[in-house]
Image (cartoon, rainbow, N blue to C red; front, side, top):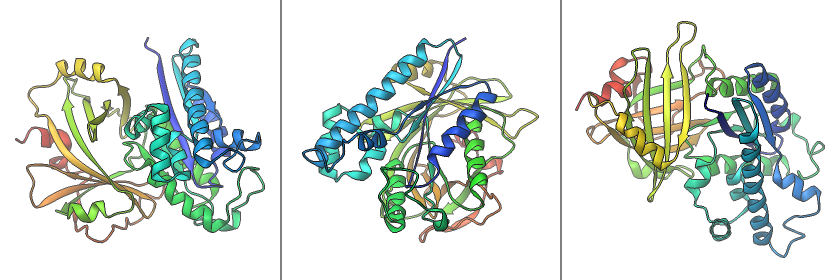
Length: 365
């Protein structure tokens, strides 16, 4: 049996509950048969050990050291995971490489990328999923504290502003989930565990993804959203059984791409199971030989942005000139009305409309 190793990030603004969340993940995923490995937060290790932006020669000197250590720790954890006898291993990163971007300007970030020989798309592609826990300073300020982390120095106002910047840093990741403070803290962590277990292929009774048919929006307005990202996506369906759907996804921009295999099944006991696996370019090209030629390859342009603690993905298909699709990842209360930003004209909810399933669209042209 092939070893299944997944690497996820737990991120968020200061005092979002990351430390407690890691314990919940370890306990709950162990029950599902996963060995959980935790990569500790690098900044906390450095700062409590005396290495900080204010003790190094410059912030850039510090950030180069932090990014190098972050990536090396992740490499060693993965190397260790490969040596373990377990079939299913989940590597949980208490913050990931792109969290570091929040503490740098664009010039510093470019210098750090050059130092470690990476680009931004490659850093996104290191992680299979990203879970952002919104700071208590947004919606639960009475619980915000600096007492439980010696490296935390932010005021609630600073923490709230940083929370937005962390979301900005990860916008564009295909599996970003934002978990806010509606409900109590236990409910927040329950939502997190549900999202992670569903991602790891455990049957889910709840599908948080909503799909809307919208009027054709102005792409320039979308790119005007805070830290919006534009991606080019190619989706290729593979030959599969009647009770499942398998496709490959190539996504990226500027000549840098990530590759994914997605398997979706519909068991009787759950709404759906979706399993994602990152691929190398070589694996992707090899799997293309198994394409289902009865269906067309689908290309689309996707704009990603966060708004009001929801993650929006707006898809433009080249054969539509008057409409587009908005996909919203809604965590928690799925009956809560979704607030759309100005400039998006919602025609109707098509989440359960078979005419707007991607596989249906793949057979239309």
